[in-house]
Length: 428
Image (tube, rainbow, N blue to C red; front, top):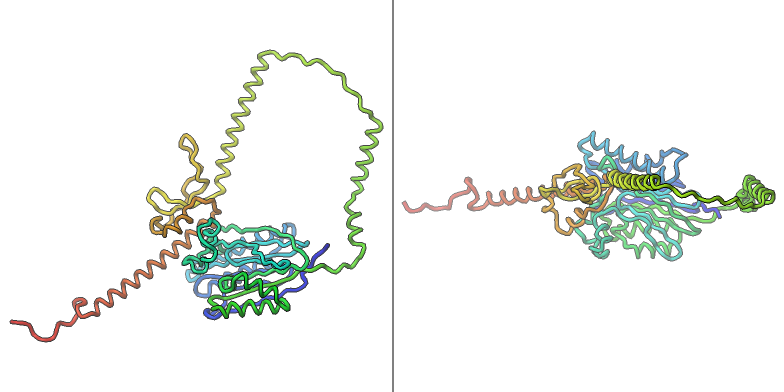
């Protein structure tokens, strides 16, 4: 049974509290995407625009759908990173990306960040992507109640995005579609303002996809509209069949002539060559020297196998990274796996040291950052950069507060050398 995209629609809105829209979208069936940019000096708008442009231009017809999406995302990451390196005003800019391509009744997905993909099937809303964010990690570890996510002070920290790092891990997967499925791609401007239960109500009572898109955006704005909000919706249905005998023809095509010929030849060989038992011969006893040789050979291959296994583990561990603290208590990026073997052999080594002292990170956040969980290099670097930005911002706030205190003290009745003396003369 063939499926097609029967209906699709998109909407984007600046929201109630932003002056510009840094979201970007792509609505060119069978390709759909949402990107949510970040960064100053309109850099976020540039980053999200690059992401959808690279998707729209993706080629390589020999690659599978997932691979093509990942190639486009990686190309966008490199372009955004290089542009940020060349222009100081765009330093640190990046974008989320959630993209899908519909083909052969399946949905291939590429995802980075905290934009989302939902599926409305039957009477149930299901989130198909997981946020690459700090609070999502806390929820998955059972250390944060989902109901507390919206009020969490670190809810805006994402652990993965296109652009901040030269390398990024793109999450990809494929899911089968069914007749009547409705898919929703959206930026976090919707999901931070509208709960999933309300999204489900809107999809359940929609008169059309256009009606649903309008109500989703309006509801986000009515609830505060703190961010840009973007939604893309599409619905699948059974494709019109031009040839009523198409299924029968396809079934017949699956029976290859080679299969028929091979089966006939096997039957002929069986009929012409009846089974004849082969004569049995006595097995000569092996001499002891040969037995010792066989034992030595076995030991050699066992040791060789162990050596190859250890080498494989060592080189395989080079594909992983994790965050920890070094002997000086500074957050460090380690390459390898956090495993210490006998004889002082470690399957990891430090790659780079950050500017962050582990003790300066709040305890609850520190337990997530320094949990030695295996990450991609891009994820680990992105998390370090987010923490460094957060600490720099905190230091800047502290500096401004200190300056404000000093100004208040210097302007008081006893504040500094320039303070006025009390009126009247003292005793001579």
